[in-house]
Length: 289
View 1: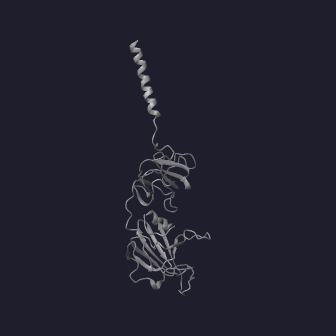
View 2: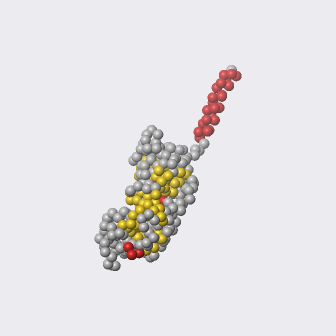
View 3: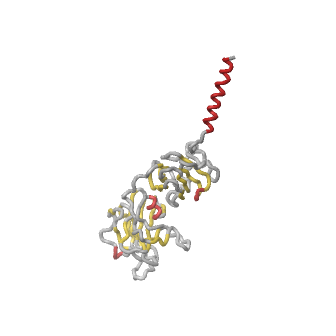
């Protein structure tokens, strides 16, 4: 009888302990399609909509093929698709900053999201071009990037004009003096009288003047509307320039209705929003916008 009672009581005691253990509160569960405290989450659509993909740790490569990729798990559009190069917005519910990268291995252009913040990934930069993320403080901002204009400048146009016509650049107005190189690199093109009709009040013949700097890593930056007469003889194709170095006086030459800098950025041949590109690089002193 004693042996029988012992045999009956031991499983009962274990079952009670297991029940108590399962009843205790759980911390954020990884990879369950719910964005919980302590997690970093990608969303398939902008504005934190569609299926989500949640993480509690850094991932150097999200993977691009099933079954090895990290897929969207939550309900909604995109469920079951690979997260890599498919995310449009994010929510950082960790207590640390999280940096999203264009390339695997925490490389390429990046965007850092503060702890607790939500953000739409940069259009033309990281939206649907996300390969990795790292939880924790990002590396210090590189000295290879700088603001091309003073913080008091005003943004008067972005990728599209108010009329809806495609522009493909950022226009900075409301400042005088020289604009600066936004990166460390080499001048690889100077185009004088490029193909736009002249509309300025100074009688300068031809059209828009451009100066292009190759920043390396597939990044090129263009600066336009300066006058040829203001171009220093020290600036020529092959000249090495540093981030923050003064280049040419801002002008109103060519297809321009007022003195301003037309600032254009290309990454691997594709135009991106130059202002947002520099913000993602951690550049300080940029105008608001």
